[in-house]
Image (cartoon, rainbow, N blue to C red; front, side, top):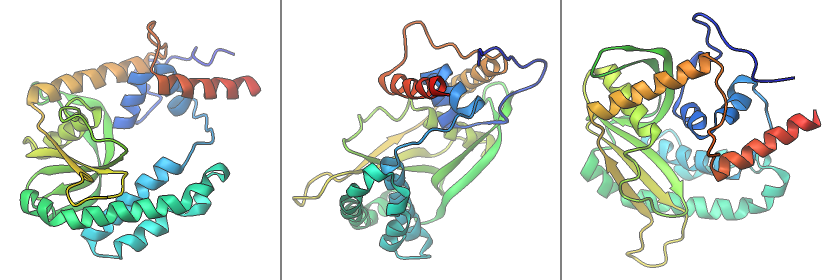
Length: 270
């Protein structure tokens, strides 16, 4: 059976929303997008990195909301029972490293607050709405949805990342997430966001006083960049409506290639 035969007609769409991760997946590999979001094939996924990142986010969120101790919130989310069997031996080290990273952030937070006024805002802000092209006023075909780690009252979009290595200083400006969150902000408030800040919590133990354990990457998005992102998303949505899921002739990246192999192996077994 050819999984890719069905095409939608008229105004039918096989999806009812878009997100940054969905657009990223389609850009990486249309075929992988099909397996995940259209065929909805569910395969076991390694939980270590996802669970660890979620636990760190929860700890930071608790610090702002003051609804629980950040370390207790972190430990509660990092539940050993949510790890796969071959990952459970990593749990003690993940606990230790996560507590170190939260400690580093809590110590650094007063400096960040002085610079960016982070305390006045909301955490884990769920957003869903049609996007607006800032240059033409055109409304997007589908709703955009996502969760902002933090949105400050002075218009700063905050995102927390855990990473083994520091980012390149200019890497944030071209990220799909950066573009779409700024496009959402403009669509919602009819103004450009003050800036987008990525706080990268490095997965390392602080050995010396001046070791870099927190990196701040700031970027600003122009109306022209937002408009270009809007057009690209609309093009992808139309390709999805037409049932276009062929990967580029030049091939796909390493991660997408590995994931495709897992899905195709599962299809062969079935």
